[in-house]
Length: 67
Image 1 (tube, rainbow, N blue to C red):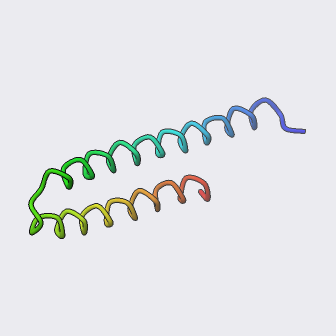
Image 2 (tube, one colour):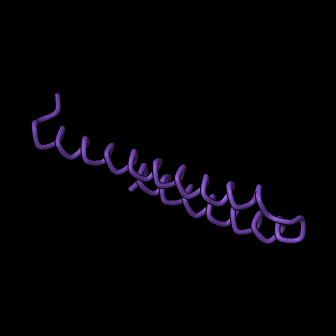
């Protein structure tokens, strides 16, 4: 059975995960929205940026779960 302090700590961890997921979704939507309105030549550069930011955000979320 977990004590009160352990429950509080696990709740904070969950809050961090939820916050990271929301930031991930928000930043991804911004980049995708810009990508849709761009010309084909710009699409490639923006796609590279999106992939980079998605992998960075995924590392943040994974780090939150692990650490």
